[in-house]
Image 1 (cartoon, rainbow, N blue to C red):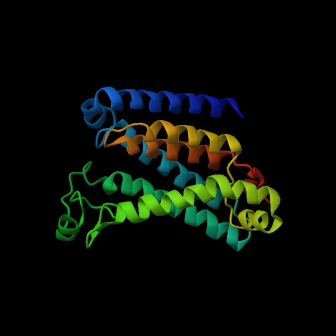
Image 2: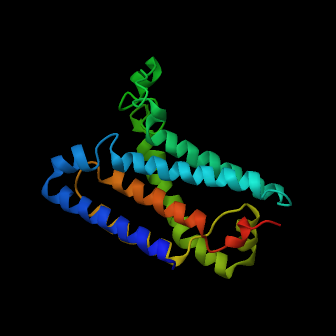
Length: 219
């Protein structure tokens, strides 16, 4: 583990710990100040996700020569996915630029905002179905199952390398589990805003220095 990782983990631990303290002792302060809408935590998450997207695009344009088509596809898809996540986090800059929501979003979005994760289909919230339950399943598979398969199954290793999928190191997984325990212990309404910041930050560390860093080397 590099000094960079230790420093980032320490900062995240402090953020989660203070969040837990405020969430348990002063929920109003936590919800309306510490993890408020359009606050440092939310914007921090968007910035982390945006950095990952830009890192993927930078790699796509600088080291794609000689890379397989699958590598280019994987790198491009990651850039799109994380750019989408960053945009969704801040409702695509709607409140920053003071843009009014269209009628569709006013009628079908739980918060009346221009984003997809707060849409309501019938009585089902898209955020709960896809961005919570499905994302949690993907996280478990990626953080726990994939590093095991990568180390033990050659077919999976070739598949991950082929599509430029960065594999987590065990300290990434441990950091997520510790953060999950801290965030899950917080009973405040907006506690998962802190978790999203943890998600974005650790994923940036993963994309910077994964278990398989050679996938980002020039041919």
